[in-house]
Image 1 (tube, rainbow, N blue to C red):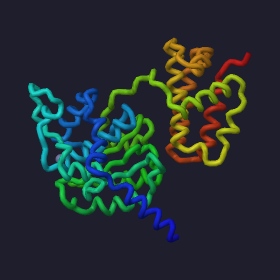
Image 2 (tube, protein in one colour):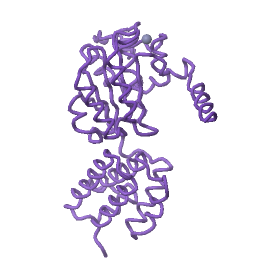
Image 3 (cartoon, rainbow, N blue to C red):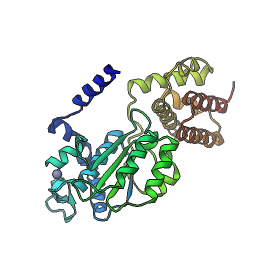
Length: 319
Ligand SMILES: [Zn+2]
């Protein structure tokens, strides 16, 4: 037990970031390609929805904007939007966070009492955390006029956590705002989506290069769809198939299907789908959607992956 405590203490120390390091979290939101999106956010700030969803873009951009949104309600040194773009002729007088003051730093470093972050990137967001949140939301913010609760990559909520969260959202609190990030709104329960306002970051370039892990799984998938062999030995390894990997595989398949459908043959996997009869593309979509839904209910991820892959395999014409 003692060593667990020590590990935790060590981890906590590591997580205290210098102001320079912490403020890097805002970089993606401040990049030129996000000017238009940042302007949308600045407009919303005047009359914020209790729950804002950010979907699309890259993971880095979504996470960056969640922090930016929190800072825009907590910073006490706001400045006009026009200053954030360097376009002095901009007529937009909406106010934006300065990103330089101690409050903006504390938000970035997760050290501000009124900016709460729950991160679904490493593990699913637990029901106990949501119960604690329910208590917190009943209290006034400590320093800022509003508290901002961010659920980063909220698709990893367990069903129990999502239900607890729904109860919190059903009792609107005048001083608490929520922001959820997710790759695609379909990954969240429809009841959570319908309670909020969805903003979509420009989708990433579908021709983006795959990273190493994605490449490795892509070649396994190609081999499997060609021969029907080799994949389940890999997916069945204990602890390998977590929700994040499954989502990554679903995205690889989705992307290759859309390439094949549009007649582009950008990769070996797209070439496999080129043989699909036209009606089977819709079936393939249905299979992916069912797998995504199954994932929301946190059933066995290995089982979801294997069922999805077998069903996709069965769509392919046999020679
Ligand atoms: Zn500030």
